[in-house]
Amino acid sequence: MSRVKPLSLSTLLEQHVLLPSQPRAVALLSSELRKPEPGMRSLVQLFSTDPVLTARLLAAANGPAHLLGQRVHSIPEALVLLAPAQLRQMVQKATPVSASHVSAGWSLAGFWRYSLDTARMARALAMSVQANASQAYALGLLHGLGELLLQAADPDTFLRLSELLEPMHPRRAQVEMQLMGYCSGQITAHLARQWNCPDLISDAFQFMHAPMEQPVFEPLTGVLHLAIWRASTRALNWGERQLAVTFPAETGLALGMDIDMVLRQASIDWHAGSLDVQF
Image 1 (cartoon, rainbow, N blue to C red):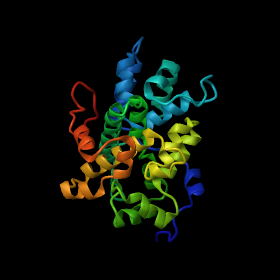
Image 2 (image 1 turned 120 degrees about the vertical axis):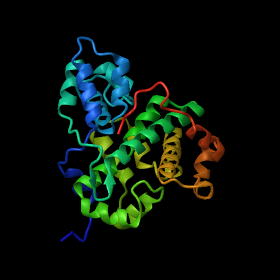
Image 3 (image 1 turned 180 degrees about the vertical axis):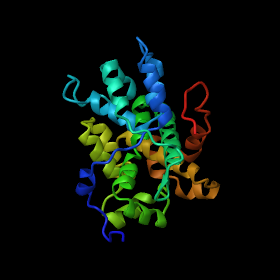
Image 4 (image 1 turned 45 degrees about the horizontal axis):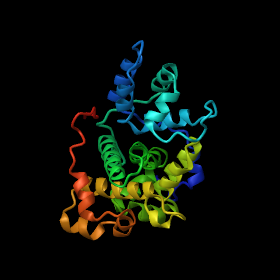
C-alpha cells in the first residue's frame, strides 16, 4: 500500500540513497586514473558525461580542505584542485547502474541523455550571450538531480507525478508544487548547498523554473531555463506549434534571444569531436 502524503522536503533530503552513475563513465574514468599521468582533457570529457560524478567532483572541490571554499563552479576548475588519488577514491565509490534500468516510469538512459542535451544547450546559449560556458554546462548537467533523488527516495510520489505529467515536461515544476509543496529545482538547490557549491549554482537551481522571479536576474539562470525548455521539448518530440506557444519569451527577452535564436543553437552537432555517452 502506497503512502498518501509525499515526503516533506526536509525529510526527503535526509534520506540516505545512492544516486546512480553510468557504468561506462565509471569504467573509462577508472581506466584513465590508473595511468601514471591521467590526461586532463580526457578527465574533463569523462566527468562531463555523468551528473552524479560531476556533483561529487564539485562537492569535493568546494569542501573545507580547499582554500578556494565555495568558489568552484565548473568541472575544469574542480579537476585542477583535486589530486588523482582523490579522483580515484571518488570513482571507486560510484554506484554504476545499467542504462536499461527503469523504475517508476523513469528511464535512466532517457535521464542521462536529457541531462547531456540540457548541458550542451546551456553551454551553446551561454556562449551566445557572453556568459561562462563551463559554468552553464555544469548547471545543465546537474539540474535534474532533484528528480533523480525524488525517484529514489519517494518512488510512490514520483510515480503519482509521472501519471499526471512526464518527468521532463516543461510544466512539471508547477505540478510538483501543487502535489508536494516544493519542486525538483528546490531539491537540487538544497543539494547544491549541502555540497557547499557557490550561491550562483544553488540560486540558479532554486529559480531555474522561474528565472524572472529571482531578486536580481542572473543571465546564467535564464540560460539554464531556456536550455531546460529546449531539451525537454526535444525529448518530448514537440512540434512547431507547441514550441511557439510554450517558448519562455520573457526570459528570452531578458537575454536578448528569440525563439529562432534558441532553436538555431539546438541544431548544432554537439557530438562532433567530443566523447559522449553511449547506450
